[in-house]
Every structure is written in structure tokens, then in C-alpha cells.
Length: 437
Ligand code: F0G
Image (cartoon, rainbow, N blue to C red):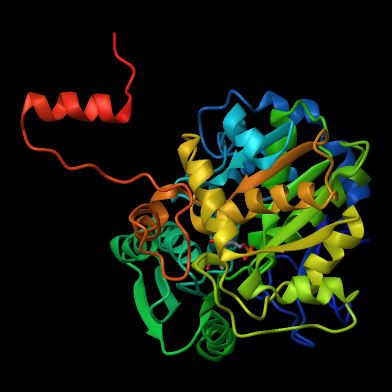
């Protein structure tokens, strides 16, 4: 009798299954999105909160990683030596300071800062899973389309694993910090004359054609890693489930991963109820939101425009998986304007926490959902900050110098210029009302 596998790849559209070690990331039969489906009955005796908690003090790879601490739920059965990790995860969960809390209007808001990952975004959690699978299936080159963070992460992990990384960027729309990382880590960086959606479509055609391993979030192993954001935040809260988890949505990989992770935890009895998920899109890049308000009568796509370049995506690849997350969690979708995004970002930055523009969409979203009465101000909310403040220095400086076209710098922090004299310092201190002894 052959043993039942612990996990398989299953097509969400036609149900066809593949072995986990097959070199595929979309359905070999119909091209549909694949899920890593774990047999939760077989998994049940292998997982417990006590096991995951016992690994918290680990200093050595792979269990020092905030992804691989949950290995049984991510890639059951993989040999520890096969794992390519930078000790990703282990990111902070901040109780927001009073000024930010009152600006948002939330009494119980925390921020999970995924910008504290090794390359400065949540992408590292998915990349450790994706690159580990790439090496397992003997890939020698990996490719992604990226608005910048995926590429920074992939370039780093590809270098670590000793394979060549190739990146397709939408021309002229990548924040400086991200581009710099991808160049520095040694990827081959290519500007595609087109937007992110065109770049991703090209990647999806090129990978099978030229035998290159695809590392966008249509790759289900990426999502298995990314779902540990939710696992880790629950663990940090001693497994107390919040009322809401709020995150930005672009290509909708993270939104998909969160729902899957929560569903599995609930089925396995590791949590007793589901939090609600709120996905926040930028107004100018909000096809998922548009479909949501129409009750998903049709799947929208659009030409995307937003200052939050990370989520400047008009045709999200993981649309149907993200819809499943809404179904699992009684979730909602909201959209926020660029003005709301840059102001929320300034407030998060001035709280000393800092994040990139796309991340601030989640905080702007919490504020809006509280204003609308969808989230009650007394509810327990965790918002995800997806990327580091240094990813997009141009937007920071231009905001504070009032140089963002069409936007108001509501909370600008101007630089001051003085002559090199003590009198100038004194005048400055008096003028700024700096408190001194
Ligand atoms: N926040 C940041 C900082 C991102 O970089 C991204 C996506 C998202 C949010 C949206 O996440 O796509 O899972 O809905 N960045 C991708 C990239 C597209 O290429 O780096 P999603």
C-alpha cells in the first residue's frame, strides 16, 4: 500500500494534483493557480502551540527563523539541511503610541512590522519557501516580475543559494531602495517597457518557455512562507486571536496566504475563532475593491496609478485565492486615496516606527473603516506594515519638502538651515520652542 502524502499541490480550478517535488507552480493541466494542500488529519499529531513555542529560543537555522519555526505547517517533511534561510521573520509587534492611536481613532491597535525582515519587507518569508523549493527541483535560474520588494528579496536569496536571479521591472516605477538592493545582490535587472501587469505576464510566459523557475507569488511555496506572518503574530499575542487583521493588497498574494493560514490553524484547533481580514487597496489600483463592492459579479482589472508603487497593480494574480480569504474570514475590502496613504505614512513615521507608502495603506484603511463604523474603535486590531521606511526615500523627502505633485504635505517636517553660529542655534531653539533646562 502506498503511503498517503502529507501535502500535495492541487489546482484551485480543475482539482488536478501534483507531487510537492514536481517542478511546477501552476497547474500542469489547465494553467490554474496551485495550492499547497496539507492533509490536516495527518498533520494534526505533529503540530502544537507548545512545539512552536518551544522553538522561540532557537539560535541556529532553520528554527531561529520566524518562518521555519512553523516548519510542519509550511513544508512538512523537508530536511533541515535543504532549507535556505536568512533567519527571516521574528519581526516586531508594536502597540501604537497614543498620538498615532488617537489619529487613527483606534483604542487597541498594534502594528506588525514586516519591514524588519532581512531585506526590509515581508517578501523574505515567501522567498525562503520559494527558493528552497527551487533548489529542491534543481533550478539554476530564477525569475520574477516586481514592483521592487520581491526583486530585492529574490536577488538576495538567489545569491545565497548560488543561482542566477533575473528581475523584470515595470519601467520607471521602482523605489530607489529596492532597485539598489536588487542591483547590489547581483541579479540581472531588466526594465520592461510596460507596467507590472505586463511584466508579470511576460514572466509567466518566459518561465516555462526557457525552463526558468518562477518566483512571483503565483508560486504556492511563496504563500506557504508568507502565511507565517499570521502564525507569528498570533504567537506573539500568546495565541489570542485579534478581531481584525488589516493589510495592503496589490497582487493579493499576502491576502491569499493569510486566509489559508488562518483556515488551517482553525481546522487544526490551534485557534478557536477566525479574525476578520480587511484588505486595503490604493484607490488608483483597486480592482479587487471594485469587484468586492459589486458582490464579485465580475473580475475587474484596470490601468493602475498610485504613489504607493509597491501596490501599483491593476490585475492581481491571486484574485481568486484572496476572494477565498474573504469567504473564510468574513472579510472586507476598502480603498484609500494617495492623500490618505501619504498622511498615514507620515503619522506612522513620526511615531518612530516608519514604513514605506504601500504599508501605510493598512493604517489609512483602519482609520477609514473606523470612521465608516465597519471596525469599532474598541476592537482589537493588528495592521501589517509590509515594508521598511528606507525602501522609498524619495517619497519621504518629497513629502516633507512639499514636492509631491497633486498631494498636500499635511504633516510636513521641513528641514531648517542655519549659519554656523551659537546665536543662530539660540534663535532656532527659541523659535522652535525646544524644551531645554
Ligand atoms: N506592501 C509592499 C511593501 C509590497 O511590496 C507589496 C507587493 C504589497 C504590499 C502587496 O502585497 O502583492 O501580496 O498583495 N509587492 C510586490 C513586489 C508586488 O513585486 O514586490 P501583495
